[in-house]
Image 1 (tube, helix red, strand yellow):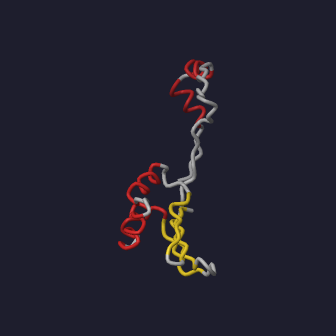
Image 2: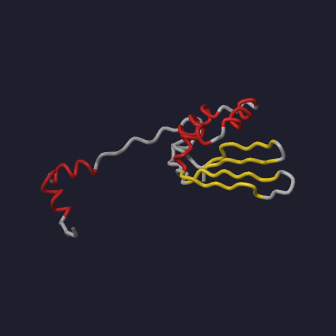
Image 3: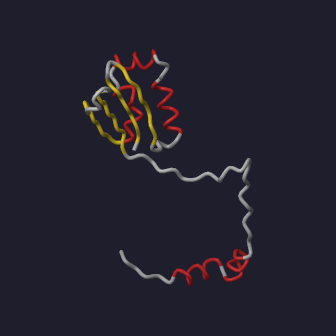
Length: 126
């Protein structure tokens, strides 16, 4: 529905000219900064979860997957059990990794990178 309304007139009638004048005089407090840090900013949200496997010697692409970034919450289900066991042996716990990533609102970032059996594997959010 395309309707052109006189919003300023409606607002003035609803709250009154006096209230609008008082609102113009209100000053907002400054944003406190600590330790030279900049204020919090919106970070972009990843759109894709990507997986790439390369031959470590030739850099030939052996596997390339792309799925919705929200699938990161299912990373433990997506990664085969054998690979999860090998990752755990290197100190990479998928459950903790997923929790950290979800706390960043699924921002674009590298998730995992490792080499084994002549293959280079990379998982990232884009």
